[in-house]
Each structure stands twice: as C-alpha cells, then as structure tokens.
Image (cartoon, rainbow, N blue to C red; front, side):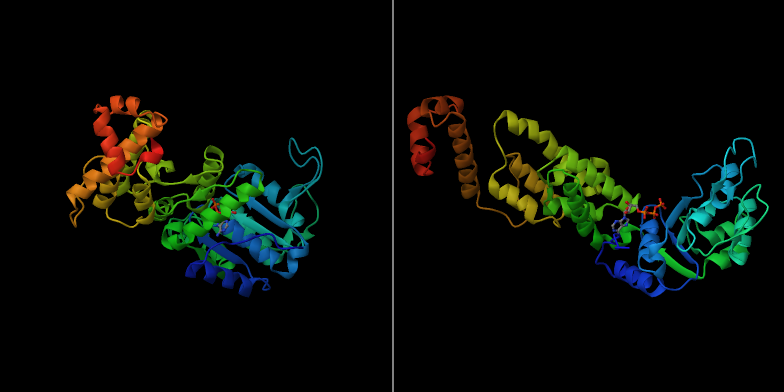
Amino acid sequence: MKPTTNFIGSSESAATLRQLVATMANSNATVMITGESGTGKELLARLLHEQSDRCGANFVPINCAAIPKDLLESELFGHRKGAFTGAVADRIGRFELAHGGTIFLDEIGDMSLDMQVKLLRVLQERTVDPIGGTRQVQVDVRVVAATHRDLETEIAAGRFREDLYYRLNVLPMVTPPLRERNDDVAELLGFFAKKCVNFGKQPIRFKADFMTALQKYPWPGNVRELSNLVDRFSTLYAGQELDLRAIPPTLLPRGLVSAQAELQAQAPLLAKLEMTPPPEVLAEMNEQPEEEENEIEGIIMLAQGMPHLPPEGLSLKERMAQIERSIIEQALTRNSGNVSRTAKLLNLQRTTLIEKINKYDLRSAA
Ligand SMILES: Nc1ncnc2c1ncn2[C@@H]1O[C@H](COP(=O)(O)OP(=O)(O)OP(=O)(O)O)[C@@H](O)[C@H]1O
C-alpha cells in the first residue's frame, strides 16, 4: 500500500515523533499514544500502520468514547444473528476487521471498567468472543491505543485498570500540544492551505504579521483547530493574501487585539475616504511582526493618518510633507486628476494646489 499519511512539522518534537514511528513500526508491541485532542494521535497511528509490514491489511480506528457503552462490545467483537434485539444478522467486529492489520482504540481512557476487563482478555488471549457466538475467533491484530486523559490519574481514581494500562503502555508515545511547538505553525498553515487548493479552492497566502500572531496563539484545539481555521480562510478569502486583520480577535494575543480592532474599524473609514495606508506603512506593518505593542499601535496610528511619535523621534517637517503629498495624491486620483475639483475637496486655492503639485512632483497625477 502506498503511504499517504504525512506528519508535518520541522520542530524537534515532530522529528522525534517521526523517528519513533519508524523505530516502532515493525514491532508488534502495543503502542499507547497520549496527548491533547487534535495533536495528531490518530495520524501517528496511521503512519505507524503504513510503515509496518501490516500495511497491506486494514487500519481500523474506533472511538471508544463516541460509541454508546451498550454497543461498544458488539462493535469491537461482533455479534451473531439473534444475540440481542436488533441483531438481525451476523456482524463482524472491528478486531476481526483489523485481522492482519492494526486497530486504533481512540479515547481508551473513556472505556467502562466492564469493557476494560473484556479488552484485557482479548489482548492476553488474542481471540475475540462475538456476542451470542459459540466459538472464539483468533485475531492477529496490532493494537494502538490513545487517550487525552492522564491514565495514571484515572488509575488512582479507580476509573482505569492498572493491569490494562501496563498491557497497553508497552511502547509509549506523547504528542505535545501545538503551543509547545509553535515552530510548526507556519509549516502547518502552508500545508493545509495547499490541501485546500488540491480541493479546488483558490490559493491563499499569509503575510508575516498574520503568521506571527498565529504563532503566539495557544491553539487549545491544536492542529485540528488550525486545519479548520485554514479551511475557513480559504473559503472567506479565496485567492487573497491575509494579514493581521483576517484573524478573529478571539485568536489574537492580548497585545494585538486593540491594534487589530483599530485597523478593522479603520477599514470602512479608509474606504469611504478612498484612502489606503501609504505603501511604506503597509510594508512596515508586514515587516515588523515581532515589534512591541506600542510600535504596532504607532503603525496603526500612522495608517490612520494620526500623528505618532516613534521612540527614536522624527523630522516633523519631513513627516508633514509626506502626509501632505500622500493626501494630495489620493485626492487627485479620486478626481481623475481634475485640479479644480481636487482643490475644492481639499479646501485649497487652485493656485496653492498647483504650487504643491509642482513641489511634490505630482504632475503625472494631475
Ligand atoms: N503533524 C500533523 N501534520 C499534518 N496534519 C496533522 C498533524 N497533526 C494533526 N493533523 C491533522 O489534524 C487533525 C486532528 O488530528 P488527529 O485526529 O490525528 O488528532 P487526535 O490527537 O487523534 O485527536 P482526538 O484526540 O481528538 O481524536 C487531523 O485532520 C490530522 O490529519
């Protein structure tokens, strides 16, 4: 079978996980993957399967928390026709389906104590008892289990069997939360954006300030949350290059929320005035993602045309001239170069405006 799974990331922990998978792939020992939801536990289990000699048989995932307690036994081990009300035909369980391959028992920490006993027996004897059946079925299955729970705490609380824990935890693997490997955020954004293109969406690109803000976000939903966000962006901003303004405020580090709010509030105003921040301001916004909050606010004030005094000071004359030139240029553009209408819009004498057009070398715009 051709491998299709890709565990993205250049951080040290991502590289270590890929290395662990390669090392563990061809052992038959049970693997226990722990980590927060959305950190890639199922992806790693698939990778393990694809890299193993078992890759020609099935990889069978089952979420033990998503299946009602009463149905889980039948799902895992199967049943015979008539075994219980509703069992209208024989049905093979997930263990049999995974014969020769790998079963992935997700959210094992949510399994009831009753089922834990039954699972332990299967792991020890390598046979399953379909409900209502009269004979046991031998299964050759590699077991990979996963949970977002701390199983040692669950054991201490009497909710998880210690013997099952040791049976499962032969080869442990831990997936770190994304906030602890934010080096991977940019690569993951690119990966999921490309995936959206493969699904026929227009490509989106990310500016530096966008990437930097998202690298600071703690990602409680981890890679799943990041992937969903890219899907949303690919729909809302198809074909565009995204900057800080595209990020939902709830995802922004506190220091950038007010900055973004001002930028967004400014957007309709700028549209109304047919003004955009001068190119040098936009460039500054994109080139200095790491700057302190006060600097970002300074950039925003600049974008708004508000006077801002940078920490290193400035030449007031030069800055005033820059602002004056920019406004005249925009007003001329808006009036298709008509000097009389531009003078009226800026409340200037026509002759004064012509002087300024000459001074700022704006004749081509007039
Ligand atoms: N390093 C990664 N590279 C590429 N995709 C990833 C990576 N990590 C996670 N994903 C993707 O993120 C999503 C969530 O991953 P996965 O289902 O493996 O997480 P999980 O830890 O098993 O979550 P849960 O505990 O909620 O079941 C999937 O679409 C998966 O393909």
